[in-house]
Amino acid sequence: MSGIAPSEFLLICLIGLMILGPERLPLVARKIGRWMGKARQMTRSLQHQLEEETDLKKNFGFDPKDLDPHEMMKPREDDTYSPLHDEEDDVEEVASEAAAEKPEK
Image 1: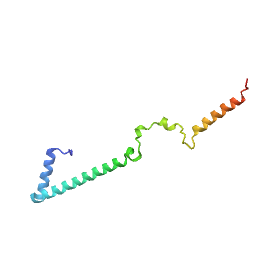
Image 2 (image 1 turned 180 degrees about the horizontal axis):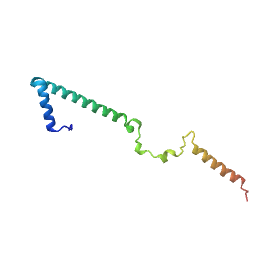
Image 3 (image 1 turned 90 degrees about the horizontal axis):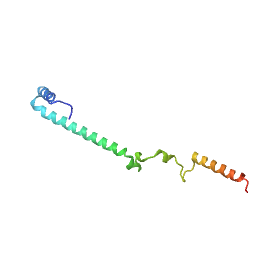
């Protein structure tokens, strides 16, 4: 649970009883318990908030595991500029020039 063995916990309780006395020990134990509860609640809240903020599927509408880098590199019709389009245009120009130079029979 907290990494403290039962014998260590008993030793801590005995030292606390000797230092604080039987009247104040239960009050101090209650306060420590409340502080630990608040710390756990704050930790859970922070963890939940971080998980919400980093949820890409919910916030941005995609899951990074679904992304395919090869698919992302393919030119699309709505691209305004892509070096791949230049290569396609060059190939088309060479093909059209070759067709124009070819003597017709």
